[in-house]
Image 1: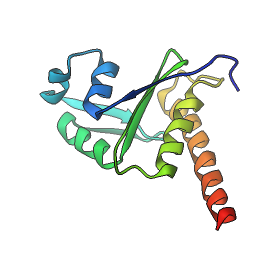
Image 2 (image 1 turned 90 degrees about the vertical axis):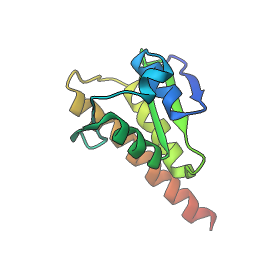
Image 3 (image 1 turned 120 degrees about the vertical axis):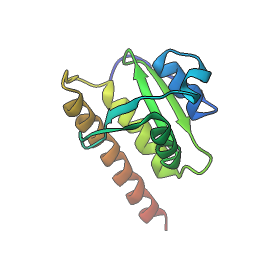
Image 4 (image 1 turned 30 degrees about the horizontal axis):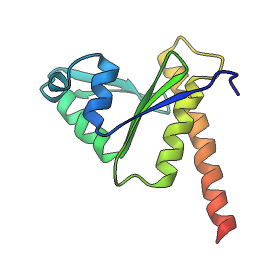
Amino acid sequence: MSDKTIQLVVYDTLINCMAAYLECEISEVEKAEGFWEWADWDGEKHSMPMQEAITEIKENNTWGWLEDKHIMHVWIGREAEPKEIIELLAHELGHSHRPYHKDTFKEEQKAGKYAEVAGTAYEMMCEINN
């Protein structure tokens, strides 16, 4: 575990969280054109029109990013399940641990493993508690 404390910043809306990530005004995200490109937790590259991406991210119930490896920014939708929240937090925490891969896809794969382990642990906890 990192010896640095992780500060958590929680946003009311996905748009607010994305505006902070993009360092722009909320209205710019709401009207944004162009494409949103990212690597998923498996390291697979994706690209889609910005407004379509926002809709898809909202359907996924959670989204976040890590700033300077010690400030975690998250949006958690009202429909988010506990496992989804735990996986998001674990994924972002995974980015704070070394080694930090300069290759975006390898970095997402590393962080995705943290999410996978946390999700499995959550499922096991639920099984034990039943």
